Image (tube, rainbow, N blue to C red; front, side, top):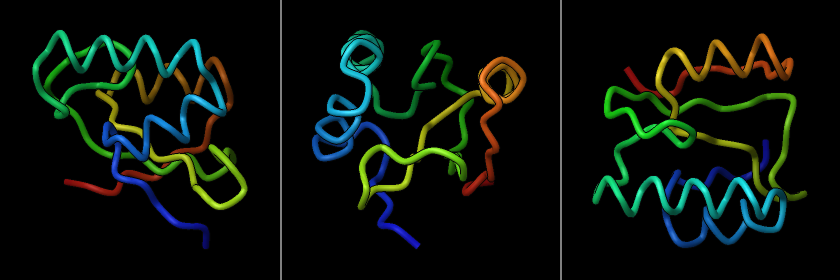
Length: 89
């Protein structure tokens, strides 16, 4: 298995920016505005879990791990075909 990067850390943002610079910048602003890393990577909601996206990689060595609310996780599965596994309770 590839290495996991904790969502919303400097190293995670660097890997995410190489994979999807536009979304990385948007997520950075969401986290900055919330003044907390414990928010959804896509909408900024505070009730979140970390999800491994098993059919996506940020880079060859990094698995895609995102902090998502339940609505965004379901939406991304439906709209983008992402297969996710929750990593936190």
